[in-house]
Image (cartoon, rainbow, N blue to C red; front, top):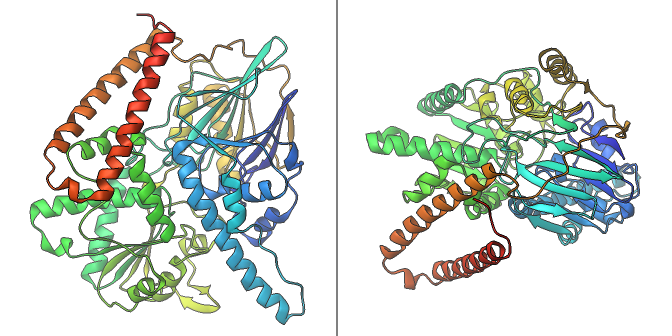
Length: 550
């Protein structure tokens, strides 16, 4: 068995690792390279393997730097299954189609430019139709579910706490009498993030492939950054400016909605009309679709978010939140002189409606730009964040006079302490750690700390490097569900929680009036009940066919 690092190796984007066993070829992620043009050109190069020979893609999450080349993979001959969590599958559908649309638009723009220069037309990397075709290969699974790829390779997805549906991938590979366990961290989230749960602690592994985005720094306390965030909003709106927030459509936007929901609710109770009058616009069709998907996957929410729901509060809605759908509505925002908050994509400012809002607000001293996510080298967002006095947007030089703020406490990536704590909590220490998904300083800093503080054997692979796994033995081949009393206890606690939530839902349902007049809502409730009946029936079949000890 060997590993080949084909993306996010001494880089942050383009995540892709090839695993070759005696009888399978697997990819973990197949992401788009993003950033400078020289990096983006890698997307058009060959994969370094024959896509038709790949049996499975194991996808950690839906972000484009992890999933964005999947349509190209299918277009170039991949015929296998793409395995990911159910929430990731739903997000992947909208993200790949959106990416395909961007590819088509960029190719059309480049073609017009080429034709004027007497050059051949530019073909898109892939199209919306290619994205739709790729989705036919997706096989959704549940967190904790044991999936056998064949009689010698088993996989399980654990919660990574990064975005909705994000996963740590545990992979057991048996060759001869030896079983080797590999763990891919995916993108690890910070502790106590809004909406989603904390990253799961993994028991151990032989080899760990771990991200290192913020391996060289510590985040601000999230509560401190939230206070700064609200102060920036209040100060900007008091002076008549607009707050522009470049935000990833999936994950970060929903977290901001969630926090603003709590903020507006607080001031509503305090009857502070000044703050209640500030409208919040979500100007990203992708973010609007993603928010609706979040609402359908509340099973992935953390305890606080679920508690909001049980109390009858939708944590992703509040009165002053407005979803912008049409281009005309988007343009009208920049014609409105009133103070407002605009949350728009893309998060790194390289595409999407955010560029128009930056063009109309960067030069205004009374406005503020708030960066709440990672900005890759070479992106427009990074250039602004690093202090440029002017930037070029759509061919026009725009002065940067607005206040520019960066709040890393909002990051969905674990910081240095979070990364060290996650791997340090493993009961069975890995024999080897590969650091990926980071810039050079972050990689080097984290590698040094893992060696010094935890005594781990750490390597930072180069792009295209092949690593022979032979000799790294686990001996822990048992991956059965409910293999310990501890897991059985956790199962019973989850059942008790489900009983409580079902009781609360029924109490609230009985209090509803006029529900029969809302045909769509009633139909959705009936469908959910049918699915619940099926799941309970399946659960009973499993319990009856296998006695659970204790």
